Image (tube, rainbow, N blue to C red; front, side):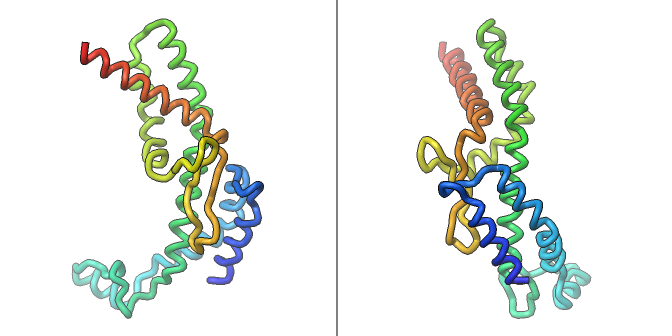
Amino acid sequence: MNELITNSYTELKQLKVNNQYSISKINWWLLKYSDLFKVVSSINNKLCKRCIQLEREGFPIDCISKPNYCIKVPEYSIFIKFYEELDELTEIHKLEYNCLLANDVFLFYDFHQLDLNEWCSNYEKIFQKICLIYNEHLDFDSNKYFTYLTSPDTTFKVIIDKSEFKEIIQFFKYYEEKNSKQQRKKQD
């Protein structure tokens, strides 16, 4: 199983073009290795006899401190986390079109000097979905790229051209603009 995981990382490395990834390549990799992810997850979710006994007796399971009896494989946990984070990134990217629509509505509201609070409440769910990943996972390396995360084997980083998230980025700028306008109104 460890060899399959290592091979999956190797294949992902090979999908880079000019040291960066496209969302479509990441989606392809996720799809190709979805069965591996399911198998590794099911193996890693099994409890050892000791943990089953602790659970029956109403005690917490102690896998976090990695006791000697724990059967969880650290490499499996790392693969699972990496896969899930890439999957989360592609799910957020699916909101790109929704953000395009929200941006158009924002411009309409702003041009006609309508209440932007209504815009915010209408698009709050989209904002909440992308807020966490935007603030916690997408680091700015330069003006052009996001460094999403470092691979589990630390031999490469998942770098993505920001243009793949241009509507999401603009959506955040509009939210910030709206909030700064609101702050100015409160100060007046």
